[in-house]
Amino acid sequence: MTSSKVGITLVAIAIAALTTGGCINDPVQDTRSKAFGTDFPAGVEATAYHRPGQPCTACHSTRGGVSPRFSVAGTIFWGSCNVTAAEYKDEKVRAERCDLTPVDGAEVRIRGSNGGEDCAVTNCAGNFSFDDNVVNFPFLVSVSKRVDGKLIQEAQMGGHISREGSCAGCHDNPRRSESPGQVFLFAQDDATGKIGIPDSVKSLIASERGKKCPDDTVPARRKCAP
Amino acid sequence: MNSTFKALGFVVFALAPTGALFAGGSGLASMGCASSYDPAQTTKVLAPDYDLYATYLDSFVNRRCGTLDCHGATGRAFRHYGNLGLRRLEGRVDELGSDASVKDGGQKRSGVGATTPDEVRANYAGIIALEPEVLSRIVALNGSGEDVDNKVLNWMFLRKALGRTAGTTVETGGERHKGGNVLVKRDPGYNCIVLWLKAPRKPASWKAAGASAGEAGVSAGSRAAPATPEEKEYADYLTVFDRECTKNLEGFR
Image: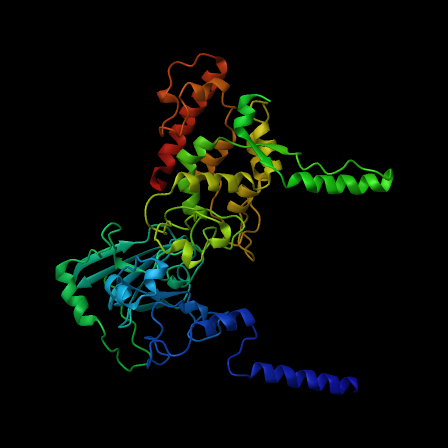
């Protein structure tokens, strides 16, 4: 084969590789993305409401190659999930002791080491995202929820975030030695296993449980209260 | 070897075979023979005080370095444990992470309970195992009259903490660090770590007198009048250390 034919062959291979359906030629990344499965929750397409509780920036990042790309993103839930690994496998225990209801309209505030601040509001699936780099790592984060303008709960993360853009990069269930569990507004009592949600809020959560999110693919970003 | 040295000493077994390998290689080349490997040989390393670390510094280091997305991750060679990050599992290494090791719920969970003494001890062991030979030389300077401030940046722990992110041009005084610079010089935490490294040797009589900082969360104030010049020096040091580190790091405990 002449050198010109070798060159043409290599170019053809390169073009084929670049145009093959979203593959970014990173076996580690591909394996990680595939591990999340398809279509979660079932029937929810790839919109801003999909994959609550999964690490958003695993795909929605420069490395993940999926648009839009987020600097920070995650999901907020009402209560925590403080069960053992074995208990977590039991669907009944999970339903009783883990509150997997997402918080719609929670405000997520971040404050970076460069002094920058930003705020995002969660959508129907509890998902939020920051798509620019206003705030530098490391940063502090707090979550709050208002009902009819009245603050009902505010929670601040104990430490700071050093470099992980996805909440679920560290916060996944069940709570164990290497994860504090999902991001929640109301903590669970370690002794009783009960989640300390006030009765006045429980009816609100009940009304949101199982709620179907709208069909809009790109929901308008809501602004945080000043 | 005096008791202070014993108290501060840290044994690094890994250095012995490495040194033997190099020595053996050169020996074989020059003379055709070498002393045999001695598995009992150890290298003693001077390390800064554990009690001071446990009482004043562990929470601070845990907050700055031990987040779950940095040195609080299981994959890190230099790991840091704490109640806000990674918890240290108990049990056999080959069982850790399996369902069997967590089925009773007895293992510590991130965010639940306080940092335990075994976690603090493991953190301390991890820190002083970073370039132990360099750390040893720094600690050995104490009392020699030499300026320790000029030597502390020889130690990787501080060089990395002051470090910079790849691609940036900001001069921080440290070396490249994936996590960027988590400390700056003159930062209260930085000052406290340097002060920790500058501790005079703890008098042999000190612990026996029940005045060990850390055991009661206090320092010089709890001790009766120091009896010797060494005790006086150490008491004065603890007074300064307690003032500087308590005041400046109280938000981290």
